[in-house]
Image 1 (cartoon, rainbow, N blue to C red):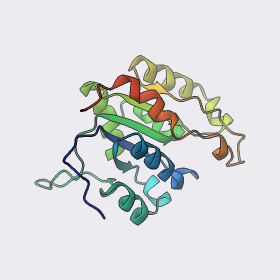
Image 2 (image 1 turned 45 degrees about the horizontal axis):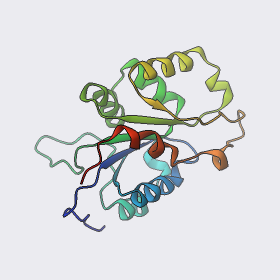
Image 3 (image 1 turned 60 degrees about the vertical axis):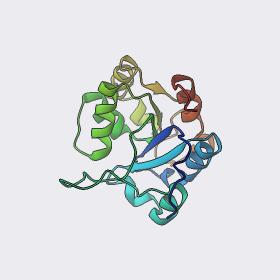
Image 4 (image 1 turned 30 degrees about the vertical axis):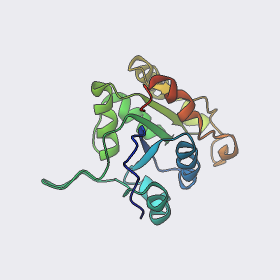
Length: 184
């Protein structure tokens, strides 16, 4: 793992990764963020962690992947977030987050982000049967009320595991960049 260059301050992006088939491609978002002069740290849901190549992601970001709460006295492994991208976001995470459920580190960070005024974008990845559920639509409405920026991904057919080719990882950055005061 490389140590990030701290001589120039870049905005710091937390990428929250959930458990779904395309999660292993999160390196595409990390690469795009680095190209746009962001530093990046990854926070995975406990189930999402199993979809990641930890060594590759940590090598790419220069930071450990966070998935569990810190113990008392343990140092913070990531700098504070200037923005958060939840990508890919599952049905489960979207609904729990909107309801204020904070039963994982990832959800805890998301629930606190609202109160801290941290710009947050979400790129949902789910199937059309899940998207048809009334709780999901209500959750998106709740997140919009919280000023969460929501990506444009169209849900794929159930049982197809599809749509990975249409998932625009960089859309999270497109949504977030106008909300930030760029660091010198």
